[in-house]
Length: 132
Image 1: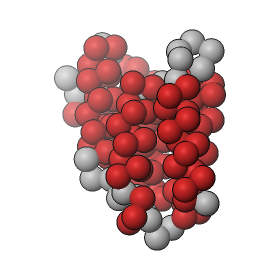
Image 2: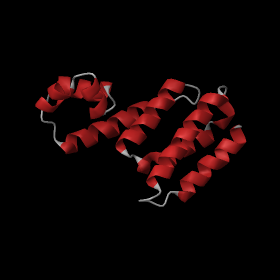
Image 3: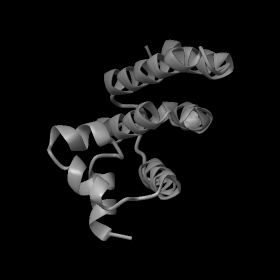
Image 4: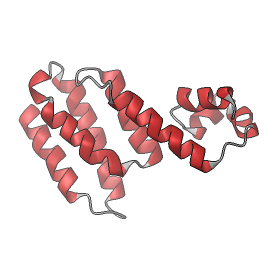
């Protein structure tokens, strides 16, 4: 396994599209990383950011939303919503958190066609109302 492949994967949050835009896709693909390894890296990336998440850190919130969006991590929406819910009292940057919630709602709406996410969507909507 190549350390460089993992470095590229992490730097681009696993987005092969972004690797392509920056002309790194051929290098990354040359390492022939199995999909099972990429799935492990996605999970590692998610928890690396999630375990150090600060409700007022817009960059970290953006990275979490990008990971969910790029990789369809709808199974992580409940813990993300619970995180926001349990950290409401710490919010000092309402606009950043509201942007994050709106991103989550957009992602949920895109996945509603294939999965019933009403409970998570309703929870995020309740949080949004409380924060606004």
